[in-house]
Image (cartoon, rainbow, N blue to C red; front, side, top):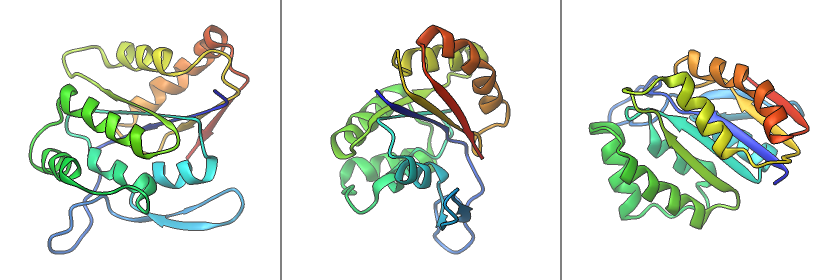
Amino acid sequence: MERVLISFLGTGKKAQGEGKQEYEKANYQLPDGNLQESSLITSVLYKYLQPDRLIVIGTPESIWSELSKIDSENLEKGALYEKIFEITWNQKMTLEMLKEWEHFLNKNLTADIKLYLLDSNDTEADEIFKFLNEGIPENTEEVYLDITHAFRHFPIVAAFSLPVLKYLKNFKKEKRKN
């Protein structure tokens, strides 16, 4: 593994307009000066960084269907997407459904995708550290941390976890993207 992108999903602000069920769109300026509009920064960073692994952490209430925007040109939205969309907007994500969604994304995208569900009954800081420890392969060249989504303390926990994991996993560089 050379590059890992870590991102979080929150519940976000819904886009305005009748029938819209997605995150509100925002403009993101990349280091090369390119400006991109998207409802999910993870998709912009995925295309820009082209990671070998994408780790996404969220809660049962997170907008998991938005991950279809990672590569919307090549990702066919079939029955599973519709089911994930329905769960995302009207119910709560279960670990079983999330693993099915992860399997689907892995079949259709070039990066290795790891999706993790924070259980509100567990200590979030411990779970985030555990997920990152499990998800970051040893001897990774670069680790990028997206701190734009989710409850603000989730990315902060990850940011404090990375220096420890840097030595446990022997990765070379860590970079924070916001």
